[in-house]
Length: 312
Image (cartoon, rainbow, N blue to C red; front, top):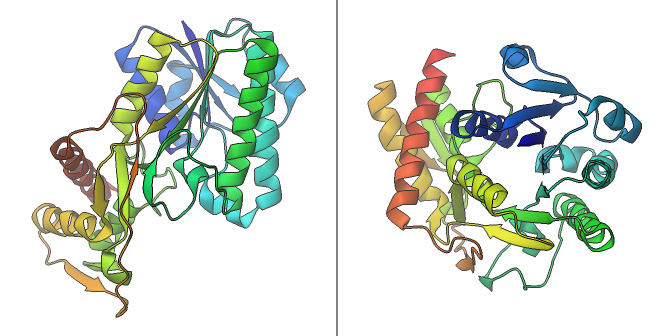
């Protein structure tokens, strides 16, 4: 099959691109606005298409004729959205609509859109399923929900098979150190341990998070491609396990001491310790993951990230 991945040079997109190329016989078309210098070897491996998803006519001209699957990841992250909300609405909303239009014209078998679990709210509590109320509390979640509604509209109006995935907190060592997602919890702790020999947690580190690995995400997407359900479907991609920010910091501290051969100090910046409410976001696709397997994956990706930092 011919699989087009938008946002292919991003944090998730680059990992997914390389995962599918190594684990399937599919032809990967990597779509990005401009191919970074550190991914120039991709030109010899993949069909690279440089185009802006907000320019529909350019998309029609540059995207190859035969596309079976589109995996759409070319959206603004939370930081860029907060800084440029108007542009985020265009990229996340109209950009998604444009890619759906391409999927319609190419008669694609499946369109997969990466949304976010944050459409249920920023402070999750209780048990949450795909039937839970949508509570968009910022531009990031709202613009992704706008994109979801475009997905629903195209599926209903044009009989397009669409799958919206809502992942929780994704973790994993990036494909390349220049991929700018060092602000995420796991890498930011690793970076602090490497550069400053300390890790700072806020509010006592009691905040709870549901973590899923890049590898788990890629395996799930590969399964969705093979299963190819008809109609419009939404899936929460979660582990159904909670880890506190303090637990993650302690994992990084332990592994950094061994890998960096340094004494890493763990500091609590705030005197006020806030208790975080527990929650459960149901994974309606594969069910809960084993806690030990999630912890093993966390430890493994922390090791990879720390080792990457030593080679920069």
